[in-house]
Image 1 (cartoon, rainbow, N blue to C red):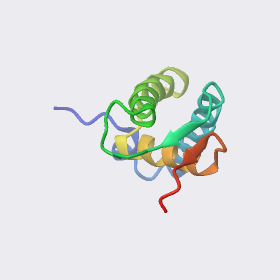
Image 2: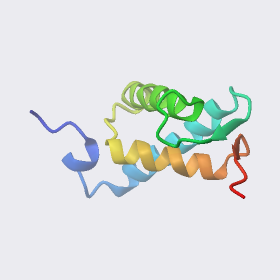
Image 3: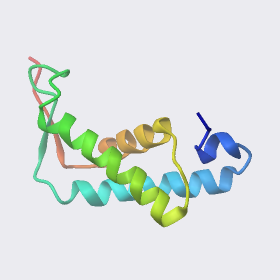
Length: 100
């Protein structure tokens, strides 16, 4: 299996990696705007049919395609995940259940 991730192929190109990650975070923030407020986790955080988990899966695939098409860059799963959760942390679209 060939290594495809730009981060692994050219780890010293930090300017490009940072630019792509900043754009990915913006990309996720823009996609979140397309959805109503999303409840984080609910009763079972491992419920793969929960709206948040379905959104995560869909946006990971779309973001990977976006990155390859826009930047000719193959983002690693870790980069996609980190940018996604940074965007979740900054977004006002996510509502967390009161755990009390």
